Amino acid sequence: MTAAAKSKPADPKGVPKISPAPRPVFKMPGHLLRRCHQIAVGIFLDECRTFDLTPLQFVALSTLAEKGPLDQAALGRAAAFDRTTSATVIRALELRGLVDRSRSQRDRRSKIVTLKKEGQALLDAARASVEAAQSRIVAPLNASEQEQLAGLLEKVAEGNNDFSRAPRHDF
Image (cartoon, rainbow, N blue to C red; front, side, top):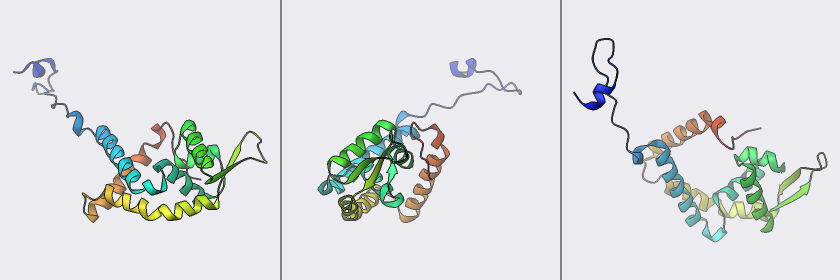
């Protein structure tokens, strides 16, 4: 009997319980998701280099294009950005002349972020490159696997949304 088996309590039939071998770190879902994130960002930056656009900037611009002007906090919630990330991304977009920030008429402490025509033009021009990046990310998979992966990732993200440091809120 192994030392591992000796240290485990026996099941009701007197058979020692043997723990399965630990999963190698490189096979753990969290590690694989982190690696895939690194790869996805690298591919996105490669495809969108002519637009000097990051994935987070693309999400912010797309959210504004879809939802219209939003206060910074609402934009962060819709895009699943924490406060610091939201402020950093919005500031970079404002400096590039892609969005405008103005004081809210309802709440003077709040800033409203509006997509400018230059931001919409960049979004439109970059869309084909963003789609190319998405295709490259999932290129090792066949069409059925690509659909399955997207569905599973959405299920994991939605099912664990409340555990995020920046949960996504759709409104």
